[in-house]
Image 1 (cartoon, rainbow, N blue to C red):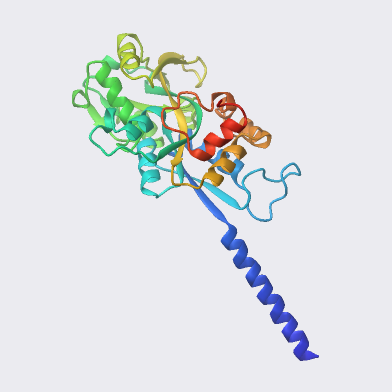
Image 2: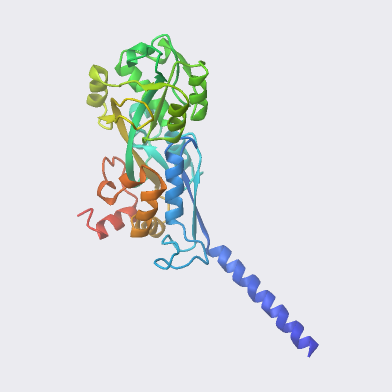
Length: 334
């Protein structure tokens, strides 16, 4: 009798162990490269990672549980931004990542700022997400009222691995300047905000969806201004590069800060052509289901602008086969 009980117990332990091994084998992990934690990519990435995940044991969709991809655990990973994310996707370091539409197109084609580099031909699009505005931030009493006023000033262009850095150089060029005409710094997120508050820099660029956390905090702690990026310089930029558009940041986007005319690019979600078609199909489907809509609407201020209607807006890099299949299925592609 004792031996029978022992055998039964051993069988139960073995069965649990085998079940655990099978569950571990079924689990899929999927990374999303985002940006600095102080800006928009990171929190939006967290919302999307939550929406597409469905770990084993989750309650069923429609019953208070996740409506993501079965056995998928997605995670938002902080990174240096667009250029870093594209490189990480192509090298296989990350499964996917966010990038500015211009940076991704140049990487895919080996043109523009990526001229001379091997084209990233395996880069693929999952979805266009939201509009990003170029913010040029200075203290209210700085006397900086235009891009031209940056000459001779201490200006953070962000880190070289970021889309902001790429765009800042193009904006300077369109206005007859270069990094050599100013003292260029490479500060990111809260570091740039703190440096501005402490008088260590005179201005900084950031490309992000408004309102972004770092600037919300900065505007509540210091008197700042947004410097317009408009006029002939903006026209030269939009005429030369189709991924830039003239746009505006409205009054009140940040506490006590007047709105300005500026330029914008699209924030898009990319992956590799080598990622499994069925997986990307299911991820795209999970992104656009009704339950994800609820998460996007409350998860971040930019979430409400992430809609299927604009999922293909400004896409210059081919869709992943799995994403394309979904968009055809729902009639967004004929």
